[in-house]
Length: 316
Image 1 (cartoon, rainbow, N blue to C red):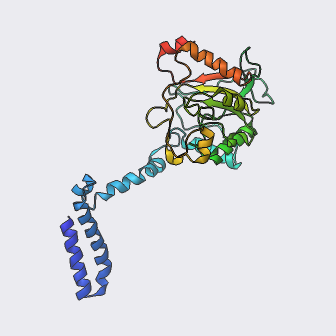
Image 2: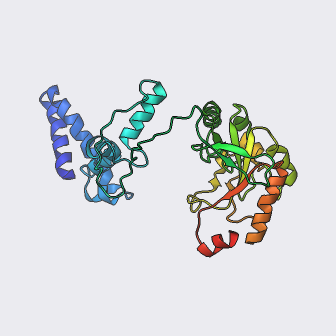
Image 3: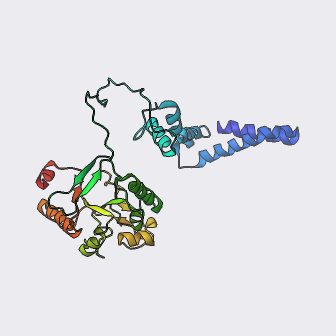
């Protein structure tokens, strides 16, 4: 095929030179296709292009526009994950203040197994003026916290930009819910808008660590005593931790992130796979109690992605 295209290109160029310049519109595209075909034959990076020169590029073109084809022509309005088109449309409308309510009616199969629904009551209760909240903190907490039912999940500064953290915390302040800092440390951007915070401590002890990477109780107590910090949380593990999770590339560790995390500037930061301050279930529980004491009696807890049932029951 390449030989045919090259031959046609040479013929068209010859006709354009010898017969009429009107052949140039055909000669130029054919010459370009011929050059692409020759390059495909000599390159050794893509076997598809080497075996199918020129037409092999159609495969990469279709692969590039596959997400758009899938989204606009194949997927139904409720097929997308993690958020389908219907949900995204509602979020966009409410964010712009154009629509806050949705009429009844659905495209879904309401009789399908696993479909979730609400049932009516003959004696419904009046809607409370204030959103419902849950008391966090047991009898040993001197400063319990009434938490909203929907809150901002953990996302670290460094993984997120300063503007993103500011926006999330400003939303928490406006909506009256809590904002989990993630394990990347407690930055000024978490504190500036004044939203309630759950300060999360991971295996790297970012923001409360010694130069050797151990837990620094003094720095932790100083930061955890702030009014914006309502709870402290110890992270044992998470579902996204394996692989590239828990790694902040050195190129992203600028002076500001290094200061917030108490790490060297410009070096890749790796969250260790284990905690240094405890190694048994009993030591874990005692350390969480210590976190509560250092924070001034605020609620302290932990989160994990359960792996071993025996280990979890041992903690309980």
